[in-house]
Length: 337
Image 1 (cartoon, rainbow, N blue to C red):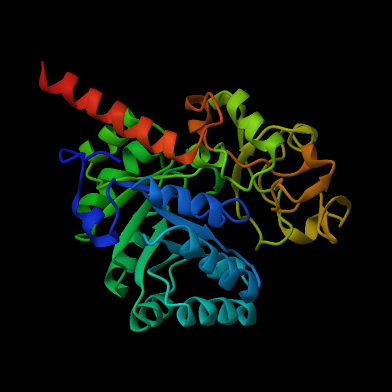
Image 2 (tube, rainbow, N blue to C red):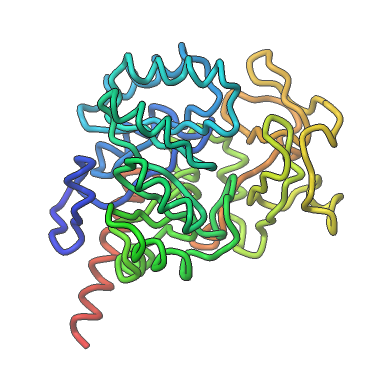
């Protein structure tokens, strides 16, 4: 790692990282290998433990700690998780004394207070200005501002370019930009709009350490930004009308013109893949993972519009270094004018 004094922001000190790059806690994809690699490279990683059993959460937390002594967090989504399982997930995180928790979707002030009382720093990812304000008032330490360009579940309809400066003006805690950020020029842009760093999912999905299936990584690398679709047909496992951004596939093409307005009960449970004995259904929110077999093309291959900026699969360390090097080049070019 190299020092980047011009790009180090206060949120780096808050999170204990060297560079203002947060790796998104992508469910299934962001496991210990990726999180540890990002932490070692100077960024801040989030384990994607959405709807996972507490035993897996404990195992993944300990696996990160076996690889690095740097801080990291755990991403949970209370809105999409059975309340009993959520309590078990929280208990595992609290017992393991994780550095931070990241929540997403509808703001739960009660959970923010509980996480803070347990000694966790709290990051809240939001897609709407009002939610950012509510999350800060409830005690969130960091707001992750998600624009509609983002991949995976998208909780808003406003682009990063427009939403980010509004959120940065409205709250006093650090804001991290999410949705469309995968490069050094994007980092500089985010800082100019009032953020203190960027939150990247798509770019880190296409890294060697990501737990995504190789076919998913390959599709991200090959895709143009126009190849993403905003839809809620991948609905099984989530509450109704919860849209995602994913790459076009045979399923989205067969539903062209009817991409929105759906819920989990609108689709049959037709198994198309398997994850270590667990059936994986067409129209589910499962994305293709390393340990899955079957017709993975039919699954949701999540990607944000930043896929157009991803042109190769490389290590997480190489990605972090490349973002920071480009950001420094952009700053130098601007300062020379």
